[in-house]
Amino acid sequence: MGLTSLHETVLAVGYTGNDNGVRSVVAFSARLSYLSMCLTLCWGIFTATGWIRRFTGHHALRSGHAMLATFTLATAAVHGLGFWFLDEQLVVGAQVFIPFLNGYVRHALGIIAFDLLVAIIVTAGMHRLFRYRNWLRFHQTAYVVFALAVTHAWWGAWANGNFELMWLAGITVSAPALALAAVRFVPPRVLVRIGLIEGDASEVAPIDKAAPLKISVDNQRCHRYGFCQSEAPDVFQLREDGRLAYRQSPEVSRNLDVLSAARSCPMRAIEIAGRES
Image (cartoon, rainbow, N blue to C red; front, side, top):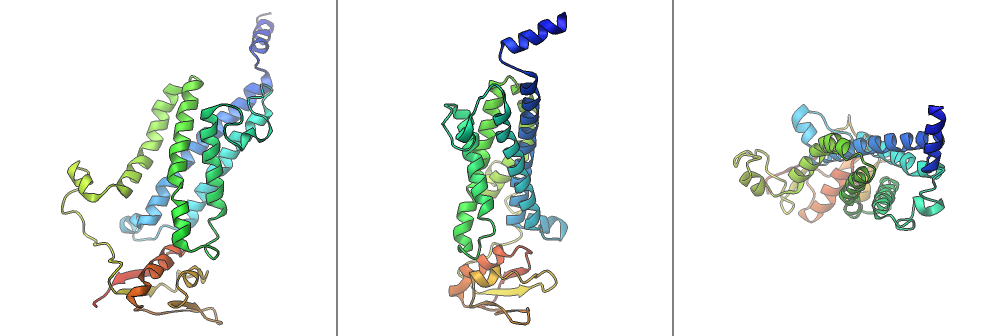
């Protein structure tokens, strides 16, 4: 009798057994997506800055960053599409993909983040269609995705009564990503002022983009994808026999293209250093 009364109470407030199961899947996939998003951001910063190489002596491969981003997208898709299967019908049809249609601002923030993430991943392999520098500017909207997704997650946790869980777990997971993003973009003098780094800790001088550069390529790492040739065709050339030919000391006027070529290499096979002018 008690179970029957409980079942009737659940039905009275609009929830069904199906909804309970779907909500569990939706919640679990959202937490997985949140976790993998933070890991994706961290690994992307490690890859872009070369910090992994400084710590371990090995390059961080972009394939790891791409795998994490794809997993983030997949779990976010499960989270969003799960709402279609609710008997409660919080969202209907295109409301899963188009923001503001269902009137919930917190849902809209998540949808915008998801749509931007799809666009970033879809364009990730289009280096030959767009200059790497231009694509990189668009790729950096991933920081906007992170901000929108975190706001969506915390707002949703508060609305659903799970704010304590997000406070403990959510901030623990996102703190390293936020710290790395801050260290990545905050000027060094600010970090010195607040005591995060020492004033004389800078051992490696940044590459002067206006000074002569010297190029070297690790043939063991190079897989001949040709992204470098797309960025600087007069500096890098893939020969008919599959070997990569390159100019070790290009003109200063080609520096930006050379640096773009090095950053676009998926295998991090191109080394750039300053040279005596």
